[in-house]
Image 1 (tube, rainbow, N blue to C red):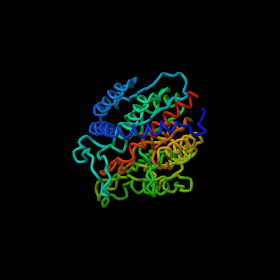
Image 2 (cartoon, rainbow, N blue to C red):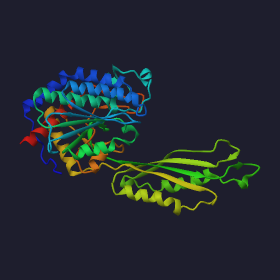
Image 3 (cartoon, rainbow, N blue to C red):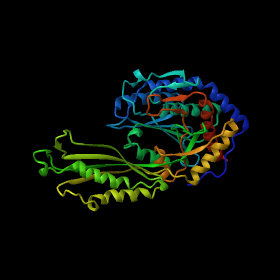
Image 4 (cartoon, one colour):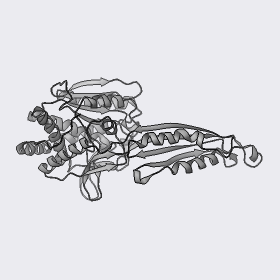
Length: 411
């Protein structure tokens, strides 16, 4: 897979035109974003996700897009939207990767209304569930594509993939994402930008991978006073296991293993017969995935319980491998940074402990640039919102990156 080595140059007049075009379309962009946000779409409610998807399908067809619906039974239908001329080769084809499912249940819009209002510093924002993560990013992608179509700058195929299960680990969309990525020369992920302490909003060139394991201990219940000796305390055994698991964290390698949810028993005078814990694993290096998996796999045989009557069950695994900072991704970032400078702003890069579907595309070797969506705060929180001021320049940058890919392929 070839990777860009030098920033592709978009003529200065085109850069000025792209920025002006993005500013003209800001109201339209916000209107589309508001429609998507008001169409609440929690991952676990297929009918709601599909209703939101219908809005995207209608918009894509209005732009002349070719729509393919990947039907799902238990999850929202995954939408593959193609624009521009069909191509047989991956060269010049770009995959815009996004999702329309959210973490918010139906009805959240009542307590978190979708509205434009200033924040405490007086900066206008679009507020509401799913604004930042990541429906505004979807609207930015549509707007950038529309700008290229109108400016006649699109001569290579663009795929906009709208996944519907990203917030729950992408159980059905992952193979679709990987297949389309393999047919593309670059992947741009419309997840939110990374906020840095100095106030910059960075593109993401690396993400940690994620893993989840569940530890279950089964013991024997007994009256804590009358039959203490007959009980096998599952909670005591789980506590010992947790201490072992926590010792696997290696901060210097970017590997964290943390038990964040646990429970046992239901009465203070009953020795608990069951106990369980859920473990979150974050890894910065691909090689640490198999290594940590082996640790969990061997735990059942290597860990000797004090009470032999207790039984241990372990399930889980690595869900998303890490998105490592590869040469191809760095080349895309350098290209974006040069184009951002032409648009009048400085673009930083960052890594993050959170994962996205970009982890999948990067792992199979496709240059992947993440965090190309909105700038804001409060993803998965009650103050979720998007700053309006950066929308136009950052949408223009998406358009410029797409135009540069087309220009480079043509030349």
